[in-house]
Image (cartoon, rainbow, N blue to C red):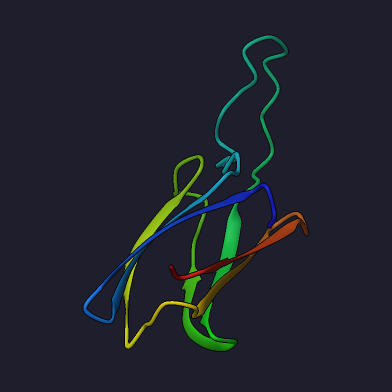
Length: 104
């Protein structure tokens, strides 16, 4: 699994409660470096895609207003143990990350 993504999943009555944290600086482009006084360039995740058993279930579009290390929490109905959850993200600088987990 990509080290930029962390999952926590709890299954209860065929509903998976999913918590995902993406480790990313999420710079707005409005802050200055304290030492050099130069503007820190914007660097943010703009697209997040979530899948359940290789089928897309959600797509999120973010802007630079989202905080550092963004966190997602959502529920997936009709989930059972052994199902796969996946995430893929991409940012405005061409960086990306992926992650998968198996529902226990």
